Structures are given as structure tokens and as C-alpha cells.
Image 1: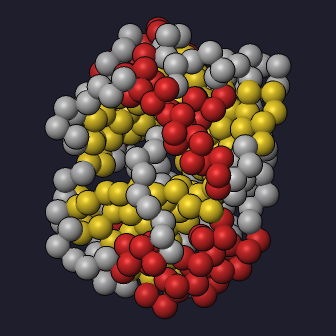
Image 2: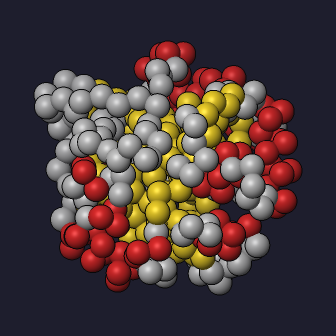
Length: 317
């Protein structure tokens, strides 16, 4: 999907921050909050934030996978800020799976590409009975999500396992995978071994469930006490039903801030009357694209999203 030119132009006003600089940031006593907004509100956020925030900028030399010993672990406890920048899939993919809206060949790194609005592709896995989705729907506190992720501009591929404890604590681990494993991690020997150790579900029961695609902005305040990700240009494609939906005017924001420090971004969001809402891309995308699945818990959120943006559907089947 083409990137939003207005957003790209608005990001030019920001001073850049590099991946290396981002890794130095520590958010103590961290508070995480999610929001949804319209694209017009995103432009307002960027205009209001400009002089007080950096924008994360990467180039296409950031293609060195992190070693296994340094697999990322993200949690709601104090931790370094995490960086994730996408990659493109070039390997052949099984015809039975719904492919991303666009696929391009990964270019060789030149150091010239500068990206501030960065593309992500994520493939969520679940059991045939969609147990991970159902656990979330039914408000189970202890739950897990498994996904493969491509950071397009960085040309990096990962498998990620995200766990939420019964105390509300979220922890994520990941490791690099080969590009050919992205569309079917259970068929890759190394990925299978990783999942045997990390997955709460038998590896043989996991199958591709939902493809999500989006473009991400990452802002950091100049005091380095908070960062916000803004996901735009969203598209969800259900791997079982073949149904895709593109809520083109929707943005999903996540604010991660030091609970001890004043939040400039929270002030901006309050001024624009953007309210916080708990939202899972996997669950909302699945609820929108599977007519048969249980979705009572998510109907109110889908109605709220439909007030922000048209839900543009298409089907590959």
C-alpha cells in the first residue's frame, strides 16, 4: 500500500533520532496506554509535537540481525526502549496463504534510504480453534500471542512470542528467522525448535491466522521520558476466510512513558480529545474479517472504529 504523503511531509519538521540513540533510552516506572484516532488527528498531533519530539529515522544499512543471545524482551517493567524496523519478504510463499497487499524485492543496502514512516508486516499464528483469540475475547488474564514479523526497510525477519501474565505484566521474546520462514514458521526447523521452548501450544497445532500490515511513526520527546508509536495505513487479511479490511482513516497509537515524568504527548492527546482504548490488532482484525467467530466483546470497539473510518472490505476467495 502506498505511504501517506501528507504524513511523510509532516515528519520532515522533526529532528531525527537514530536506532543506536533509541537503545540508550530507559523508561523507569513505565506506563503503557493505547489510543485510536483519525488520520486528520494524526496530522494535528505531528504539528503540535514537532519542536518537542524526535522522530526515529533509519536507513537501509540497519540490516544486521541481533544475535540470539540478545533476543529482545519487552515488558511493562523498567527496560530499554525497543526498536523494530521492517523488512520485505522475497521468498516464495505457499499459495494457500493470503499474501500481503504488496510485495517487492529487497534492495541491497546503500545507506542512502532515510525512513521516518516505516513499513511493518506481521503474521499472527493461532490454533485451528483460534484458542489465543478466544482466550483474549473471554478476558483470560494469562494469554499468549505468536507472530512472525518483517521490518521492511531494515530487511529483518523475526518470530516473536508475547506473553501476558495474570498480573497484567507483558513480556516479549524474539529471535531472527530466515525470510522463507515468515509465511510458515512451523515448517522451518530452527523456528520450530524455538517455538517448542516458548509456545504454550503444541507447535503442530499452529497455523497462519491473520496478516497485519501498517506504516509506523516512532516519536521520542526531547527529555527522553516517553515515546509514542503511531500505526497508520492499516490492513488486516484473514488467512482462513480470505477476507481483507482496510480501515484507511484509522490510526492506532501507543504511548510508553515514565510514570514519574510529566507527559507532553498526553496533554496533546487530551487537547485533541483522543481517549485511551485497549485494542489488540490481532483480535480486532480477526473479529472484522471472520464472520463466524465469536466477537461480542469487540463489537463496541468495531462500531467506534467505523465512526472514524470506512471499513473497506475485499475478499480473495
